[in-house]
Image 1 (cartoon, rainbow, N blue to C red):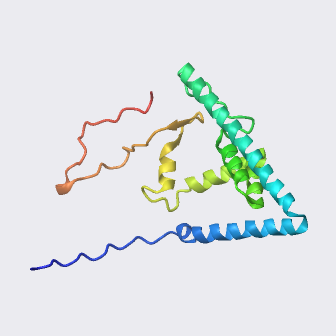
Image 2: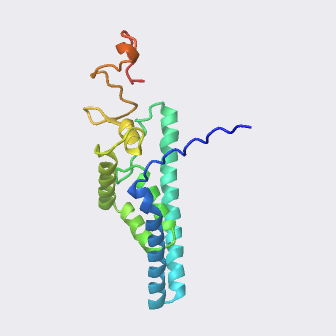
Length: 198
């Protein structure tokens, strides 16, 4: 009986710094939250800490409920009119429902630091600052590998000259077409892509 040689294990791609240190960051965050709660509990009493945590849960639930109702109202309005852009309501902050949802979730999480971050998401000037920073971080072109989250984010957000955002995928035909084996074109010469308009 003959056994074939076992194939060598495939080399794993190196982990990014963010994936390597994320568990350590989460553990440090939890330790810091627990330490802050014990400091507040030592300065006051356990009932105060419990009431602070309960107030965070109640406030976060109310914020998420309000943002969910706004999103539902936008969806039903868009379905009734047939025009998704006509009934889009962004709220007083101009941020849509993203920051209220994140802020409400951070308020619900037990801890004082998460409550402060949740309130920063809900406060309009700091919310816009956080959105700009996240946008800059995600759209930074340096180091965006094909298939990465940054690459997908760049493909989905395309701006027209009038400032409107169009959802879709960019197909560039300004460069040379890919060549197949033997130097022939891998794409038919007369093939055109339809425009991305509805």
